[in-house]
Length: 435
Image 1: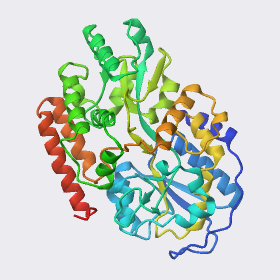
Image 2 (image 1 turned 90 degrees about the horizontal axis):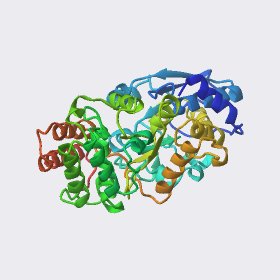
Image 3 (image 1 turned 180 degrees about the vertical axis):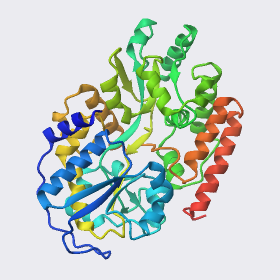
Image 4 (image 1 turned 30 degrees about the vertical axis):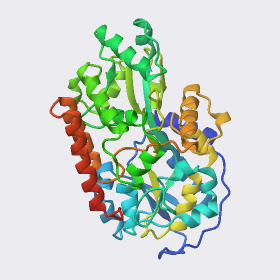
């Protein structure tokens, strides 16, 4: 999304928010009105979320006279060094944090994030965010998600969709699939015509995410709770895991996914789809606005993977208030701007998934379809989140295993065994299980 275009969208739909008095929370914050507050983030500047946050800051400054100093960090900086930043006098007033037990949960369990419960109550954020969407913003004292302590505020959601090049489907006389049988039949027909149907990278997370979407076609709420909240030991022989791993391997053997995926990154496959080289591409909704803007040569459509019972996705990265922030009340006032209905509607019009939008004012029909699709799963509590959330080591470990499966150097059984070992080691190292 073009930044100037995004700013115009948000400025057009933003609604004024009544200024509220400070919460008077504890934590050593300064009671004096500051000249500025600091805001660290790593989102792309052109993203709908960043544009919304900066529009919220403009409204906040207009209302309070307090400037917001934005500072860009890399994802890696925050992921690897957040505990050091937040435990120092250099901690910002607001920080973007990845969600999940191994990220926001771990930081919360270390006492580095403020308890945002008083602000949730004061501003009514729990009335604007569904319980399903709040699950990755709330943790227990061990840092396990869906707890009772709010440690961050989500301002958008994201999930995995399958994008279809409708022109390629029409060219080869193939129907856009509505069931898994139709999906595999479409893949077989494309392959027979000399077209590799599925764009997927294995150097990063594409194959891993496709696998987790397949898990979501067989999983239920109990399986997801066991995986993420450690309700019971994960059954590594359960159908969701064996089916999904064998299916990825089958698609590799049949050529539905290229073995060359081992040398591809997410940007490679995104560009490939934009150029019209592959008919099928599963990716996150963060690419929806990009596709809206950049795909001009063909028509496309998108939906969740056919047969999905538990949707891969959740609310996006959290905005947290570090415990060492000296300006917590002012920071919370800014966050309340970010979740306001006007800016949330702007996020929807810009091609992202809002949590508190006026849907009657979301104009783009593709955006509206995406938002309603996510909302249907979220309201029913049918979210599977992302597979690497249970422990901080899994992001690298799981993608590495799928690179080997893609390369043909490991079998499905060996892949599951290696992931089981990484999962158990990571969870044990975090000390989050009672047994």
